Image (cartoon, rainbow, N blue to C red; front, side, top):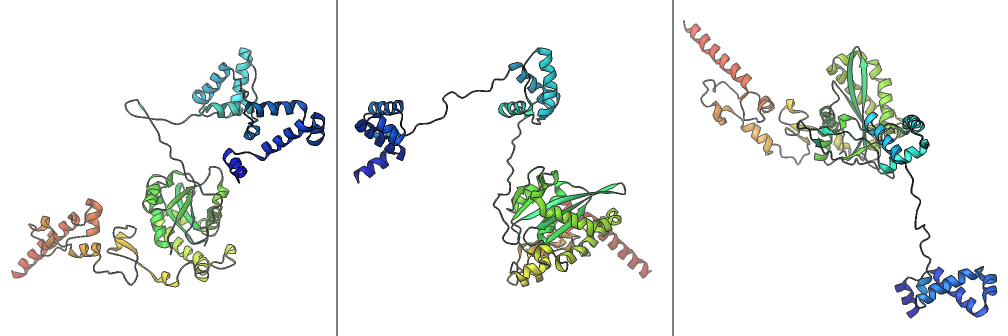
Amino acid sequence: MYGYSYKYNHMITGQAEQRLKILQFWRKHGSRAAYDAFSAKRSTLYCWWKIYKDSGYRTESLNPGKQARKNNNRREIHPLLLKEVRRLRLEVCPNMGKEKVKKYLDKYCQEHNLPIYSESKIGRIIKEKKIYHHRQKISHFGKVKKQNRKKKERKPRDFKAKEAGDLIEIDTIVKFCFGMKRYIITAVDVKTRYSFAYAYKSHGSASAKDFFQKLEQVFPYKIKRVQTDNRSEFHKYFMGYLEEQKVIHYWNYKGQPTKNGHIEKYNRTIQEEFVDWNEILLEDLNKFNNKLMEWLVWYNTDRYHWSLDLVSPVDYLLNNGLVSKMSWTNTYLGVCQEGIGYKDFFFGQVYREFDFHNHPVIREWNERSPLNMPQCHNCYAIGVCGGGCAFSAWLRNGSIWSIDSRFCIHSRKTLDWLVWDLYKSLD
């Protein structure tokens, strides 16, 4: 027991015990016998014995030490060549490739009688010295703004979508036809192949945010993770909205579209089966999107998919218990049809336990009346005015309790006409 605790506390390795055994054999039987039995040379034995003796005969002193070199070779770089590489990559052409750098560097070496470096060595120099050019923002005062680069989250290698909504891949199709550009944002669920698409005139992050809001309404389950490429439309507003909704955002690696393969294949399918046959409608996006919705309904409900063993995405969801059959009858309830897409006025999928009449937003809209708006009390048309459009007032002024100025004119003109018409009829 004492030997075990001593070994545990002092971390005596098996190699140290073997060396001690060899030393004891050598001291008893001599160098020749030790060499024949353990192939231990005389110089090695004396070296071990010296270490063992100098440590006060401690067994742990025979533990193998580090075998790494104490003085590693350092790459010798001529200072003039290093200066020239920095100049080429930072001043002449930002982040110039090592192949081009070598072409210029060979000429420089011949002119100044300096050693010529290989292409691979130039690449190692760039990596070791971190000779990279980064874009800088300069304020109107002439000061360089510090940019805090946020590390992009990548999809884990061992990640696998197991449930509906675990991973939605999103991408953009750019179509140039009839002298105009149109952007079709697409999305597909990796697990269920349930998909959605919508066309826009611009590819800004506001369009991508609007697309995701529509996506939340169309998909019959909660979206947990999203994967996109590194395009500009998936930054700013889109990224901020995902953070608000607590949706994990994975970024695909640059130059590796195969890792976003489901949406790339879907992009080919939707172009071959719908977009290329309806390009003429891209001039009027309302018509295009309306017809696109009809195609998407067919794609998700009736079209057979090889990846799902020849069933439609909806049938796959129902057959595998990934979503309840009752969820397809759920509707989105709100206060005004103009507010579709605005979560301030639409409250998501509504179930039986939802108390419609006592919801604070609905009660506020019910109470909105010119009689409850102080700014309308002195208006002579208050008796015939209903308060105008609450959504229009919110859209223009940020509050449903503000005045809808367009309807004010209508109410006053209507009252004036009624009074004059009654006056003329009395004559």
